[in-house]
Amino acid sequence: MRLDFDFSNKVKALPPYLFAELERIVRQKRLEGVELISLSIGDPDLPPPKAVMDALKEEVVKPENHGYSSSEGECEFRLAVSDWYKRRFNVDLDPNREVATLLGSKEGLCNIAKAFLNEGDRVLLPDPAYPVYANGATILSGGVPVHFPLREENDFLPNFEGMNIEGAKMMFVNYPNNPTGAVLTLKKLKELVDFAVENKIILCYDNAYSEIAFGNYKAPSVLQIDEARKVAIEFHSCSKTFNMTGSRIGFAVGNERLIAGLRKVKSQLDSGPPKYIQLAAVKALRMYTEENPPRFVREACQTYHRRMKILVEELNSLGLKCQMPKATFYVWAKCGASSVDFVKKILEVGVVAAPGVGFGSQGEGYIRFSATCKEEKIKEACKRLRNIL
Image (cartoon, rainbow, N blue to C red; front, side, top):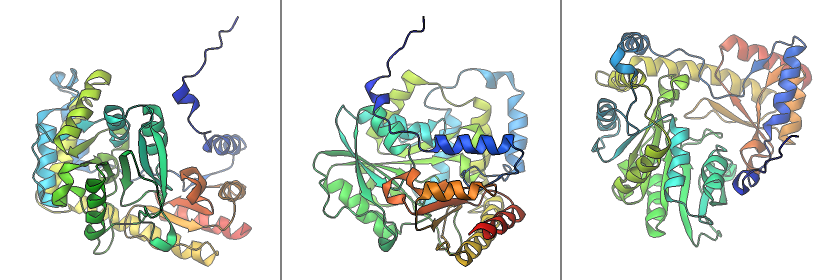
């Protein structure tokens, strides 16, 4: 007899997984032998820098690097993070009190919620947004999602006008933004910090795409705002900047109390990333010592910029209105109809993209395309789209 164990109430509260049906169709297409071109996932196809790969090879063979790492991370890695913040943002950090090592920023975003949310606490969340803010962080920590819209007419910037923010304890914000590609100026960032301070809200600032920027745009850190240390914690990852997605290493910095809470939760749940990965990430962060940003980061951004120009021009010519973003490798295109139906339609010609409604109700009518495959693949995908649109 099979025992039918019941899910917890928190798991029951999770919304249906919208991408499940699309994943089934993708699997079926592959079984049918269709050559799929995926413009859906934000997983860089570029390799990590050679210097980082060399450091990984060097460190992985040392027996002393195969023991447990502290859940707060190796001192050398936290020091490299604080040095990087000084060079990149001119922000001073205490590596012992204001830096936490993460198994990727996704883990940190979920664990900061566990550290500070009580059952029923209200959390302000952007819509559309990275689904982890609502699901993995808020709902699974007993919080109540309260969405604020990111709309095109407002440049996809936060707008709290007319919202009931009473009792809100925490807020997640992400710029450069996934999925829209929108960016935030230092002036707008100060307004956000002032809002959090005035309303005594913990500000969780996801800055994972800060180094994927084009032209003269340079993404700021929330900690460049003087008042931010009262309320803010910022999350970064080596995944996008150094193409180390599979290494699962990131970091959080900011308010000492928030870092302490995050560390306390982590001490009960996990150890730090493998020591050899932390030491390779130290090498990556110290690439900023000679150049800011280093040559590798500049070349990666140039590659993404070329790809996105092709994608934006082609999509606009097909009637899918979109803007060239100043950062990220995402293009947020308007399809004008059901985003799920649109994605199913383009799957007929072997092109995969992400439906906007998968990022929230305000994402309906949009499609997120990711420029994380080679130019010839992007051109071929657009050629296929032209045959059916």
